[in-house]
Image (cartoon, rainbow, N blue to C red; front, side, top):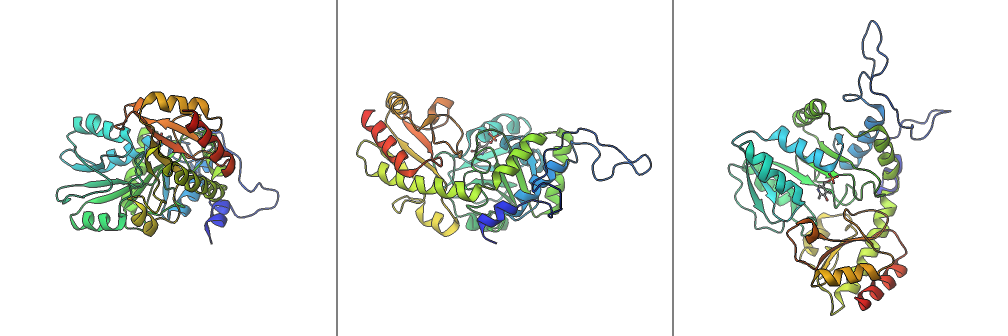
Length: 364
Ligand SMILES: *Cc1c(COP(=O)(O)O)cnc(C)c1O
């Protein structure tokens, strides 16, 4: 099956007369137990939940490996790090990836005696001898560099390290890290996967039964599960992932081209632009290029004027939603220049967006 079909059917139960296509959210903490047998299917929602199971089934089908969902992307990433790493271990992290992960390594992981090395996504990659886990993020948020996952995974495995890939920006329709040699995939489902800017979600997926059990035990014992309604909303939203990504990617292609042709905009990055440093590896590795574009307007005041003038661009953090948004990353302490903007293309009409952005840039 192709993407558009897969996302519509992912995780749905077999058709049964009188039943909904996607069963509604089940609101329960404990379930009835059989007085003799004890739990039958479900006992307590922190460990078993039918709405969550259906969503996990859907994500697992798309990623190509069994999935565990979490209350947020950070809950998933920290669950992975803390269930795999032990005192004395070293983890390799992207120096240009999601900044909260680096902050967690510098604080909590260091406090636990876990060392971290930081490597730029575009490389060069060091010798991984002595490294327990290599976490990659490709394309990296917010700089949009891309790494050759297969090549890095081979080098890491040769040195005895595990490989995890943060697949947030790409989504499982953009690339499947497990098929590219990664041991684990981890992501925020808050962004393009669910795409409506109305929930927080994270997941870990792996075909390694031992790792799956470790992460599942971690979740069971720490309790970082998403609620029933968020699971249901997420599952419902995944049905439109193919359509949303198509329009976001088309909008990004048009806007990135327009931005790169303007003399008053610098540093335009979109891995789908033929002139982009990430173009070659992205076009070989990815099945589609996400709708996120980055560029530089020089200073914070010009970004503010641009955002005030634009009618179709909401100033907001996060990305991947149906509404076009822009975020000046330096305001969050991200290691970017003051005029750096991450633009997340929504699913609006391409011509409308082009006209609005061009007019806003002219005014700014
Ligand atoms: C947003 C994001 C996260 C964190 O996800 P939350 O759902 O906000 O906790 C992790 N990695 C990347 C690449 C992200 O963009």
